[in-house]
Image (tube, rainbow, N blue to C red; front, side):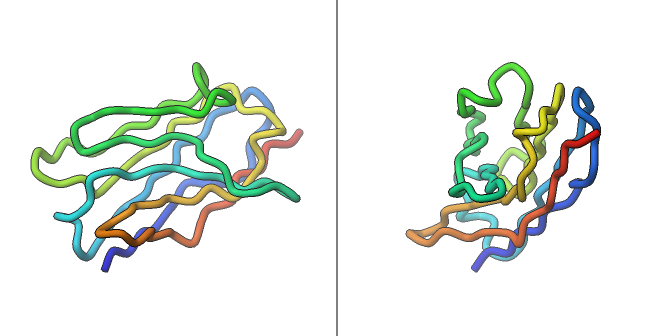
Length: 118
């Protein structure tokens, strides 16, 4: 099993920045990819960004150029990912979740709320 804990959410004004963190524990040696997803009010959960153990990165079009996903520097495991969010917009308001698919199961964190409002 894998446990995921997100942190770093909060209230920010439009144009501001936030940095989210996700720390994995448990069977981290089986993690090959971790990602950020979000669910805004009345919306379905959607992909934000993913990063593999080898460093391959994927972004949703809506966040390209504004958000940056990164990972810890460990060579043999992937256990911590970050999401640097810049130039935030009200449409970025959502609960942000961390996900790690491991051995056929999707593990999710409980999420962290990001509110972009003046």
